[in-house]
Image (cartoon, rainbow, N blue to C red; front, side, top):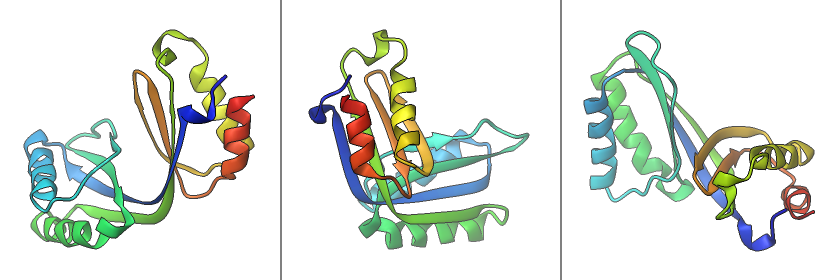
Length: 150
């Protein structure tokens, strides 16, 4: 279904989740502006649907950038008392890309079945037209790849 060239594995990824954030796009923009001003590269981003006036936002950075981001999120927690920060480091990002992914039904099934067979502990999922990325805390990477290229 896929070739090895379609699969990218990246180690050393930290997941930062901001819990119970005010549902305010200006605040979200301010947070990401501050992170950008500190020259921190963000990769995956996911937001929950709002629950009343709050939501959760998760994003990933390299493990090397974790300390800088935590300094910023600690400042944010002081400013907005209800915001909690959850951190998970030393994760792995599994990315599967294929130019025809958006026109071929069943691609998500193949990827998630491979993840299941590899005992993946999925923390975050992001997608694009031609790409699915899974952030996992554990996965038998060889099994994941093998099940995708069958």
